[in-house]
Image (cartoon, rainbow, N blue to C red; front, side, top):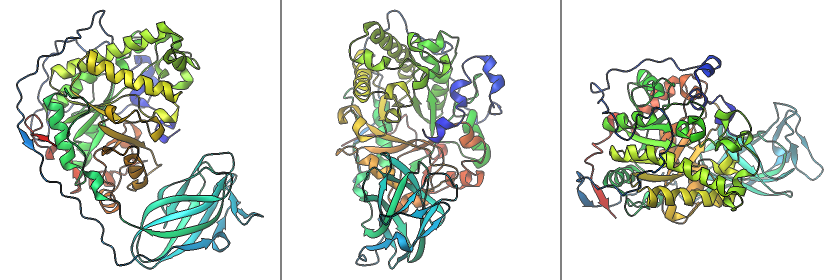
Length: 548
């Protein structure tokens, strides 16, 4: 389970009931009355509901909306300009192998009878295997560890010159190469160290081999959307996203704030960022969680839709996830945790999707219809949504991730019902399943999202995950950092060829303190030439629609 789920999920639980507030650490409030350029625009009351209680209607309006008159000019897409690649210094040097006998073993690590070093049993926090390598030419390198695991799949941490670089994945009971690619190394000596996260591996050697820079052509992705009836605001937003992709990343922040309404572009975590940096995020992250019917039945209230409309009226971009609280009959734990697997009845999801529980299937449809009513309010207000449902499925910690085939069926059902039954043509579909085997198909995905929580103050570009996500499919898809615990260094991302389309730091402790992101880093990143903040956005309501 990643760092987000080990930490206290304030924004998810604090809306449950007022009595819960006493046990949570809340973000200091404070409503913002002025935006960087003056007063924020006021949202009109939304005719489709007051937004304070969740739930669908007995007979939801499923009529296709009449299209509004477009303010977007349709233009041929500008010629693609590939980003400059990090130059090479000449022919690459050949690979070089460093046996473990020449490495430094710290803590409880020992040489084994088969010539390896291990076993990273986590008995000693000082366990560390460190190689000193020599680089004759600056550039990209693959670090290939000859390693084996004890007990299946394992992840452990790689450090280069004392800085976290990423994870080494080992999944073989015999010695085999476990590659870690795209490490950028300067000429000279470097320390490459391996420390335990999951532990339980042995390593025989490290081979260092030169690599070509990442291919810049992966930044060329279509401006069209998978929904052929996508509305003009959604098409224009996607047109803007693809024209910035590879040149700069859009800044984003999950800004759910507190249960009384301190959230969105002018509240919550976004306001804190403004206080620290003088900038506001371009992308505001919100959650449909409290519109789930089982939460509404327990008295939850939400004004996330109002916050989204306010953000859009003030020219910000909106992304929504949905921590889908399971239907009430399947909740076995604390009700407000019922998006987690451990708070729901074992096996219920697979039973429903396999056809063994028709009543449960209808309950899922009822929840989808309830969320559709909220998305319709956004559609009718002209708000395009970067829509990220059923996220982090392959991790298994959410109930929709307990069975792969059931997940794929539910994802396609959700797409079909929202698109063809509810005519929600304002959605840009961000798939966030986190593994290629959970990919539903190109016809259901506009953007691929990865969620990464690498630890504390780890500002690497995460290039390996970026390239892994881009390779989930052979079709060109934008790759974004849909959740992150730590900001990445934009300069490193440019150098490494891993300029994520946008990023969205999770809320709470990931930004309200300096455990994960120092305020100096926050200010530096928000003022980077490679980062697009709210004040740098064009007028999204009149941005051209580019034709591929």
